[in-house]
Length: 80
Image 1 (tube, one colour):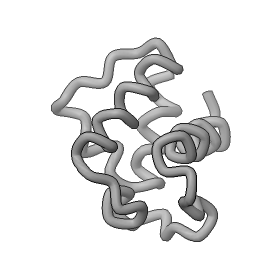
Image 2: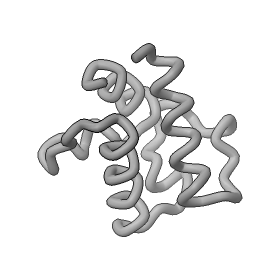
Image 3: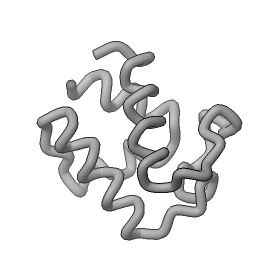
Image 4: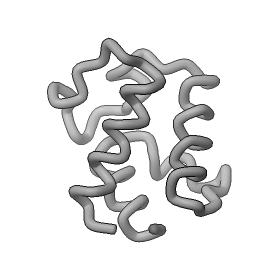
């Protein structure tokens, strides 16, 4: 998976969780939870959706890799 594909996957799944978000306006280094006002359940739903779509296991110890757009993009591209 390329980083562009991983970024699009993130945009798709974040759009399902928070349909009113403006994904293109987020700072790539900003914490996604803060940028999109995601609570812990929303974040867990995001992790679960990404795991299912990519058919990978995302360990709880790796959740910190999904906190900002740039890190999440690199992480997902490498794992997929």
